Length: 275
Image (cartoon, rainbow, N blue to C red; front, side):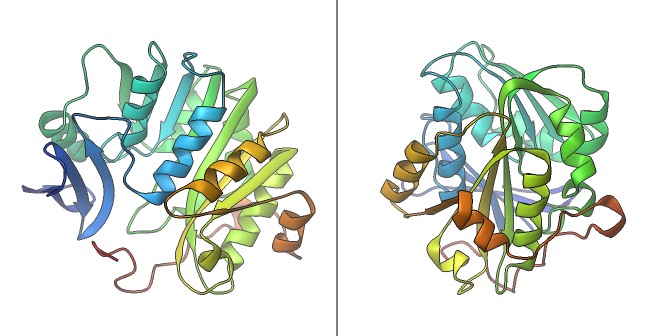
C-alpha cells in the first residue's frame, strides 16, 4: 500500500516471512517494522537495542511512563505495551498524515495506554509537565536528525521531564570519522553524569554508515547487562562507557543551539531494503 504523507511517499510493505508483519518505508527508506501478531518482535537491529534499554530500565513487567519522540509505526510503543502492561505512553510525531495512516492500517490495541500527539518534539517537550521513566529520541527528517534536537539546550529541556531515576536513549546515525557522533557523546555527557553508546563494531570503526544508540541517566546505567545484551544479539553490538567512551569522544565539545547541525545525510542506498 502506498500513500502520500507530510514527510514524503509512504509505503506499507508486507513481510513475506510473517503473516501480519509490515515494513513502513518513507521515500523508499525503511522506517519501522511491526508484527501485529507479535509486538515483541523487533526486526531492526537498532530497535532491538532500544528494546534492551526498555527491558533494563525497570524490573520486568513493571509499568513505566514513556515518552517517544518520533512515531513511525509505533514499534517501540507496541513493545512497551506488550512487555510492561499498564504503562502510560506518549508518542510525539510531526507527520499528522503518517499518524493517520498507521492508526488506520496498523491499529494499536485499544487496551494500550498510548497517546499520540502531532507536533514538533522540542516544542511538545517544552510544554510537558510529566515525569517520565524513559524518554526515547528517534526522529528523522529527510533521513537526518534535525539540528534543534541534538543540542545541550534540547537535552536540558528533556531532563526537565525525566523522573529522578529515568533513562534517556537516542537513536542517531553517522559514519566515516564519526564527528557528529563524537559531538553527540560530548553533548550527552554535558547533561547526564552516566552515559554509554552502543553500535555495530563496523560503524564504530568508521567502516560503514549506520545507527548509534546513546543512553544517559542521572543514575548508574546497567552497563554490564546492556553489554551482554548487545554482544549476544543476532547482530552483535559493542558498548562503550567510562574511559573507553571518553577516548571515543576525543576532543569533541558539547553542541549548543547556535552551532547545532543536523546529522549527516546517509550515502545513497545505505538503508535500502535488504542491505
